[in-house]
Length: 226
Ligand code: C5P
Image (cartoon, rainbow, N blue to C red; front, side, top):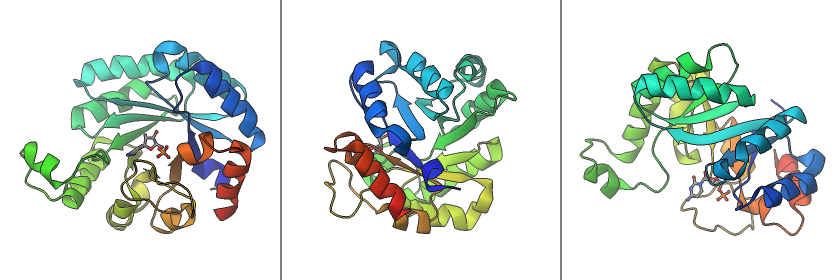
């Protein structure tokens, strides 16, 4: 995989104009963009279509969780965008519905294992008899069995997931910070190169690029590190 296929830039901004301007400024240094529900009601899907038309790859971060039949219908509609990645939560019916709905569109279904905001107290509050890493592995197993293409997981968990599931599950990892960059609200951060060494296939990077003085230079520095 080339560095530009690995790097997914999160367009976490409040308007389509800002998102389009960032894409424009990043230019050739950006090949893969994540669009989340902050932008969906504002024209995010049309932005996604225009990025695909311009030869870019798109990650739709919808984090779906619903009964299988509803997810299947929703994902079937989403295939019209031509995106490369869609996120759902790691629930068997949700994943099976998403896999049925994507049909032969080539849309990759990636399951969120455990949100990075969860800690051991959150797991306990949900009544789940696991420590956080075991819950991540349990949900990765649900994802693999239900036919997901991969999972979203922190670098701290990537190694254990790769060790158990190998190439069966691709891993997309957020919480990436080039050395010296601000940590923001990320609790555990890792450099791009170390994340790949830990087993991450793709990296999601938001603020270190989109809030940089020169987003193209920030993206290029990460590509060089990879
Ligand atoms: O921190 P950064 O701006 O690089 O975040 C990029 C992506 O990582 C966000 O779009 C979000 O999906 C995810 N994220 C996360 N945990 C946080 C903050 C963001 O996983 N605490």
